[in-house]
Image (cartoon, rainbow, N blue to C red; front, side, top):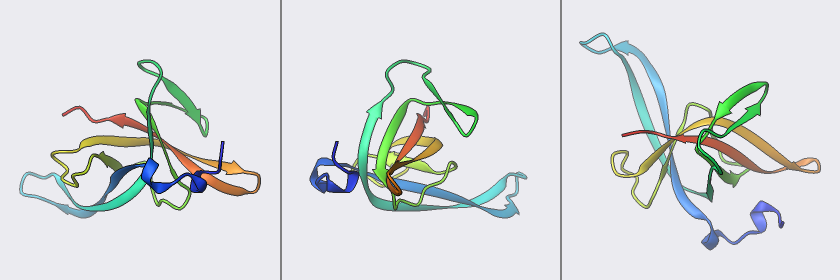
Amino acid sequence: MPLFNAIPNRLRQQFSRVRRTSGGTQDSYGDATFTQQVTSGYRGFFQIGRKEGESVILAGKEIAYDAVVYTSSTMLVGEDDILLFGSSTSTAVSTRYHIRGVKSVYDGLTMDHKELYVEQEVV
């Protein structure tokens, strides 16, 4: 398999990342407020899990996932982020996937790509 960055960009799927940050305040109902930032233009590969309820152990923690997303090693991503698939950046239109685990894959001494274990949000 070639290195991830050697694969042409036109073969990769496009998606966006949603990052929520807590505002540290409460609304009139007592719920915590947050701000949401959408960053689009990320590219990678999306692979559905082989069976229902599939899981993987990362850092000693068992994580159930629906799909794996292979993306660039330089993508800034965290376990609390959400991925939006589709051409739309609207959070109501695109399919939303919560990131449950992030695994860095190395080729020798350098990081080649990241594997994101995601779970589809039920809407």
